[in-house]
Image (cartoon, rainbow, N blue to C red):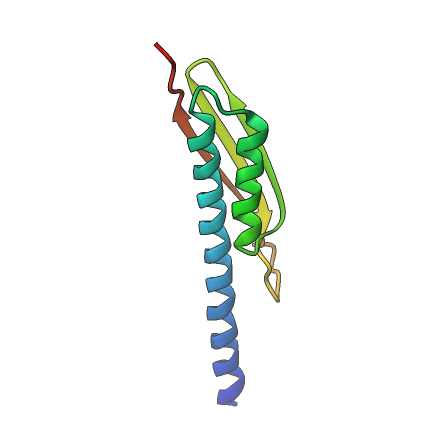
Length: 105
């Protein structure tokens, strides 16, 4: 009777760790894209590609990146799915990042 509870606790802990790692990976991907996009000469395509590389290298699945450069600010949204064994509707993640643009003088 005790073993199923122990196994459930272990599996739950592992799944929480996988979910948390995916969230941190998407945060790093968004930060990478924002850092690249805030520089004057960087292109939106290169910043999105960099975010995709970071997210995919962390094991996140179904990654999509949307970047926008405004007059004074850059915004990036990174979406992905954590590779969970048991999905209870929590595997879809979305992380956003923003930064001011670095304008040439």
